[in-house]
Amino acid sequence: MESKNWSSRIGIIGALDLEIESLVKKMDGRREERHTGFVFYYGKLRGHEAVVVKCGVGKVNASMCTQMLISKQGASSIIFTGVAGSLSNELDIADVVISTDCIQHDIDASALGFERGRIPYTELSRFESTVELCDLAMESAKKAGIRTRQGRILSGDQFISDKEANAKLRVEFGGECVDMESAAVAHVCTLNNVPHVIIRSISDKADGSAHMDFPAFCAMAARNSFLIVDGMLDLIGEEPLSAAKDAIKEKIRTVPDWPKKGIMFRDITTLIKDDEAFSAVIGMLEKRYANASIDTIAGIESRGFIIGAALAARLGMGFVPIRKAGKLPAKTVSMEYELEYGRDRIEIHEDAIKKGSRVLLVDDLIATGGTALAACRLIEKLGGKIAECAFVIDLPDIGGRKKLELEGYKIYSLIEFEGG
Ligand code: AMP
Image (cartoon, rainbow, N blue to C red):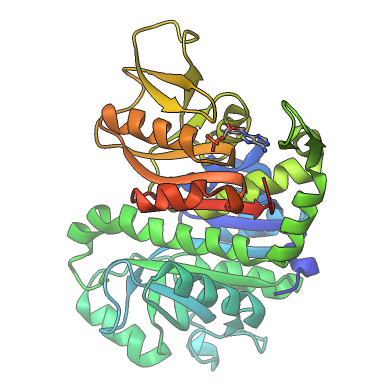
């Protein structure tokens, strides 16, 4: 999908803390501003300008917050993410509804001759979501393997919690789920001509079991909404990957016959000093590992520290250095490995890895694979599990990748150079 104007500054709203906290945590360069009781978090999400805010519960809060996002913070589109009660037998807890349109079920001027849901003296009742954003949300949900339906979302200033009210809403308005904010957000966006979509994950059945289900399932449901929003941001304006990789490759300097004759040294200093290229490398790795259930990142001295630590910070996780012998100050375990001529030794602090944790091993380059294999063994010695080994560069002709794969490790590299 092409990057359009609507993605120039994306406003993301949730009603509750837990609906926005994963996004806020993920923001790069985050800063916050307070206005009229709302806290607006500014920063970048997956490289896109974004503003995230909690609006609180109910249509007035949601309307105020949406209008401020548009008028004051310059949001070019709005995504509302969060949880809702189900109105459909087809929807289970944690399934997701992506809005086609929204109606305020509690607007009732029927005494004046307007059908329920219609804003009196206007043609407005159904607030349609932006097709392009709905498609993006559906694609993201599919990628994340989350059960999703597209349909109508109803909102009103009541927490629906009995079977009768639930059935009435379903029959009268035909909604898939009900909440207390979405239609207000959709209404404000429509009046402002701002693209929007609502992503609601089912937290309860809105049928009397809500008091029991709501706290229990809210976190799980909010997580699914988060995954879809995060995936949408990932899909926006995706550059063709091969072009982006070519651009990275161009930034790497090759120094022939260094450190000794016959070696083509692939120098990443020219890559990491470049604002865009360095950020692109870390961004690509971030994309791959954001939802890969990694617990920690280990990097191999010394260029593995640069890539590994930057990635760890982006992913919000810790970093473990694997160093040449004699450099680490506390108690270590060590491993010897073969070099072309002779042997070498690497070390890790013995308390660096939690038993059973999933570790991503990172280095700038894999050649013979000797260093990476020794590092994997060290991590395993401490009880860690190697989730994958990631490199910026692979030299396939030297055969390190094959060697590690034969040992049962998963290998990933961004680019390859032919020859040695
Ligand atoms: P190996 O153990 O043979 O896979 O070598 C990998 C380690 O040596 C990595 O830490 C690399 O930084 C470094 N290395 C090996 N060959 C090269 C090369 N041609 N260019 C740059 N670094 C290399």
